[in-house]
Image 1 (tube, rainbow, N blue to C red):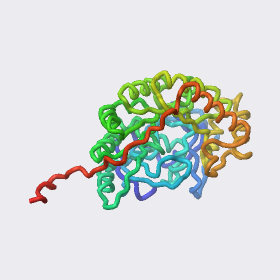
Image 2: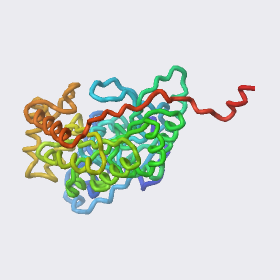
Image 3: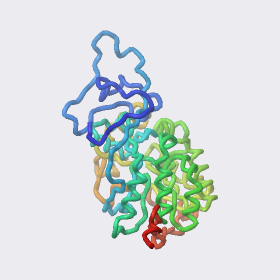
Image 4: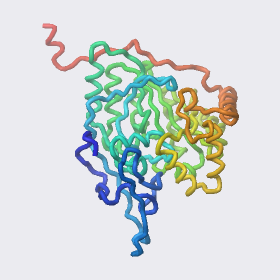
Length: 378
């Protein structure tokens, strides 16, 4: 196990070692996105399930409990120089995500911890309760350059465990005190808990929120994103964020050909009616272990469409399951990808989306006073 992990807290017992990294059907998949818990790319051993003749596989596997450990990280701001995204810094309060979205591009990061990108990613989570203090220390460093802080770009900052830890709210409180701009991406209506802070920051031009709506089909959403809030609750969140004066974006993401891409226009229409002023979409990405996890899910949950879906994905990825080249990984290439981009552009034009580009302010940044600072003036 990675040295940064320590202190198991709550949310049920940790899976026994002998039960880890076993593939379907030995695991209980109820309420989970991944159907397996296979070894990661860094594991030296790979385990498979076999029937020893004693009927062990006939028994119902125990329910998979969620465990949370404390992450001993020493820094909280992650930086990047990717030309594909609009931010150069981000904060992720948690590692892993209980929403369990089968398509989540963050799944492979669990391999760095010696854990599986499969069910481990959605059931063995890490929290960063020291995030607010670490952020305060980093913002106070001499020479800090202010740019929009992205929150939740890897795993969702409003996943269920945030109800217990409330790390996201603590981070937002620090950013508000420093007058630091923030952009949030989430697929949870739990963001409404922090409406007071977000509306205060938005009034100063310091906050915006993007809500991901993958599908309006509740059955498909339950299968693809088993522990994420329903599409209706996300649309309600968009409406209430917009009513509070917070610039709100709808993310139609990811778009999966022959599975949910036919809903793109309807998603944009419904979100626009709710109050979203801007929109974006991202093509399904299948890097590293995700391609096998997604194919496994697709053949089990959507067998009639599986071959067609994968064929279209490859047609948009140069004949491969995934193309990581900058400039292509978010939108793909080829005729189908071009058609999808055109559909999105036409829909946005018709719905008056993306007419205004909201730039968050960076000129209000200031260091809030600390206890004892006034004494230094004497």
